[in-house]
Amino acid sequence: MARPAVAEINLANIRANFQLAASMAPNGKTLAVVKANAYGHGALEVAECLARDAEVFAVASIEEAMTLRASGLRHPILLLEGFFEDSELEIISREGFWTAVHRQEQVDALRQLSLSNPVTVWLKVDTGMHRLGFSPEHAAGVYLELKRLPQVSNVVVMTHLANADDCSTQGVLVEAQVSRLPASFLESGVELSLANSAGILAHEVVRAHWQRPGIMLYGASPLAKANPFSEQLRPVMTLKSKVIAVRWVGQRAGVGYGGRFVAERPTRIGTVAMGYADGYPRQAAEGTPVLIDGQRSKLVGRVSMDMLTVDLTDLPEAGVGSDVEFWGESLSANEVAAYCDTIAYHLFTGVTQRVPRKYFN
Ligand SMILES: *Cc1c(COP(=O)(O)O)cnc(C)c1O
Image (cartoon, rainbow, N blue to C red):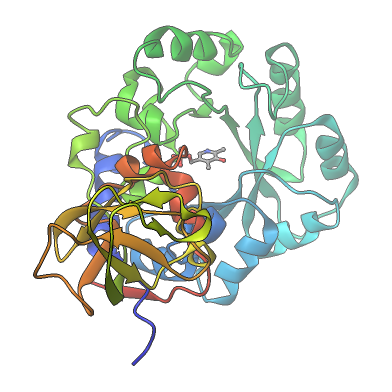
């Protein structure tokens, strides 16, 4: 028998989530962000599943883009972080990739090369995230400069929202970021890309033009508070395994490394084949929810590399071979993430190569 740890990926739900994103900007276009191995879901499989729905895919690096090309995907692929070395430009041009441009040296590199095919450039503007991009004061000039280059076939203006997920302060901050864009960018004729998943789900003001959904394709809402759109998202990854051993421990017995869990009553402990080397977070707090054969229970004790322990005391039917769900179809990744002091993005991208992905639908 194979080790039972597995990540099941519901491809039909990815398609439904993409359709939800696309339907929110019927006059705009929607690309699919599949960086970081499609947030841990498998970039090749996800791209193949969305090949007919998405016109463009987006990744973080040329290596990720080349992997998709090598699999036969013919779509334009946007490099969200741009190119890291000038030598990538020839490949970008040859392979029909699109690239972000976020600093002047990249514009200069473009100008100095003669490329086989002109490239589509996404001009990144820093409207308040203060991570990547030209300042709004310089961006309008750079836009005109790029437009004039024979090496450039099209320019899209992109900015990234820093606070789109925080519904308490949302409107103000997102509007403030948008208002920092040079006025000339808000004229018709300039293609804009403003919205990540949180922007799409919660901010009508950024929904036009090019949308860049990532996490919502994978079924997790980035919003601090659900809204009627985020509630339509369907879970995609279900991380599962099985109970491989069961024992009773007496009152005051410690369980696992450091004896972090101390039994307050005679406790029936189930040991499950899932650990931090699979991507289940070691920082998961005492009491993090898990589902045992569909019933809620909780993590007890520290997560080890290959195993963790759960409380089966109130689930007498459960035993060796019982199914354990860590997040997914019936237990939201966001709920689990809160117990782990992290976010669903981190849980999904953290699932390691050791865990086989099983695709269905
Ligand atoms: C990762 C990324 C996205 C997708 O963000 P989500 O929050 O996952 O929707 C969009 N735009 C850029 C520039 C990114 O790097």
